[in-house]
Length: 361
Length: 279
Image (tube, rainbow over all chains, first blue to last red; front, top):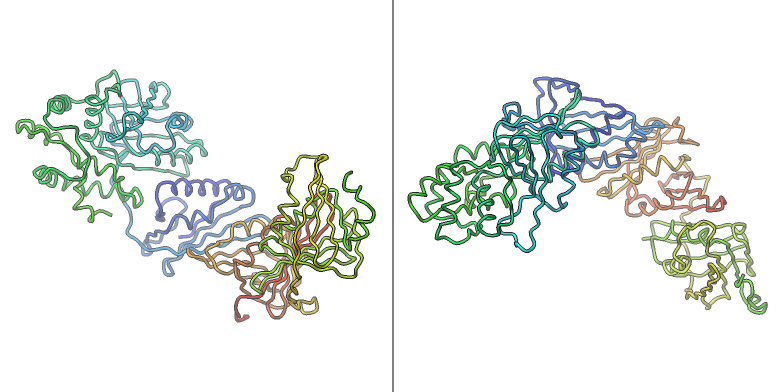
């Protein structure tokens, strides 16, 4: 692979790398057939390297802007070496030879066009919205229905009620460049990755699109123009965990006011009733699953898990956070046998319990 | 000004008196060599030379000529002593070191002689502080035996371009390799770090290159930890001369302009880390 970018594009490339560095620790590079990349078919290979090494090359954005005229990236698969050459003013030439590891190609299984819900807005809108959440907040919940979008922080069910703060924003569909909602829905995903994309999008001035379906299936955040396309595919919390957090907030603290529009399904209602009348106490999210539920989970999770793993890889080596995993474990099944069958049907399990953790990346 | 109202008899006792209206003209340049606690002071009629050494492999010298000072009186041919440089700098900046225009700290530095402390009278906005810093027997500075007749390669660069390179140097590299050659790559700084290597090439016809006199290809490595402190001197300077001699010893000379536009010099001498076969 041998490619060159000039002038302002070098800064865009640098910003993309800085943005990705906020998501994961490794960078995967893959030359593609189209565009400026040249990848002879017999030399198709993929590489990964610590993102910090590449970041060091593009460390100072201001000096890049000031002095870099041209940036050339060459990949030498025989020597497992990536060479980045920066041609700067006054004839100064900076050459960085970075070693990389060969790896399998990463392919996230997603098709954003087939997502039922699409929101698109100028980066400024997303940035202004996200600004209201504390920097330490990990997960955000986006709910849509009809003509409105709500963003609120995802409060852990085991959080101390006296310390928990709920922030909720409501945006009208008119604020968006594109608003296509097929069904009322609510998804929860990591805010950190969204922030990472937004720093990149804001500097490039490109609108940010969000494609999503039901909770549990990935959300795709995307920016694109004629020369670049960025897709951030993130896992979302599955539906049963969602119901959990809502049911808990209702039963326990009565703090979170659900949005006036009812976007919960009928199955949810009966589940909630079961929760409120259950003999079992407030669920504790210890990773110690109920014995029979483990079997159920194992069966239900087999096919879903493969998909999850591929999505996880797309997150650049970072599996869904441990918090996500523990929420799955803590799923409470009421004692009553009638309700058991109903709840296991509506449950979508995405991860196996802690004993299988070793299988995951 | 209070500093000048010392009694005449006291002044007669000092073998060295140096005064500055703006103490920053001394403190700034001393900061450029302050990588170790102790400094050797050597005063002659020409001015002040302050030396700091590290590991017997690195030596930094700051030269402040006599005409930089508003008053420079010396009653001996050579005066030498050693002081704690960190303490000296703390005293010179005792009024905070803020750069409010028009306000500066005035300095009168006095030395009675061997066995006596170095006395500093500092004044700012009517407030006077007197500091007495203990002096020690001066150690003999290393003689790197670097003479201009032995110089193999020499370049003079404008500092700006080197500043950027030095700020980006891969600190995971133990050495900084310097290649100087009459042919490509002419002048190259290289690092060998954890993620790979990096090279910074300056062509001989670059407009940042003020002088290019290389007679022979030389590649020498110097410990990064020794050279990194020179970045401070580089930051203050507007020009730097880089010379290597036949043994591979490195001399870096920085031209520094102080607040009043006067010229001072800082130089660094460094031994090479290991023998590298010359091409």
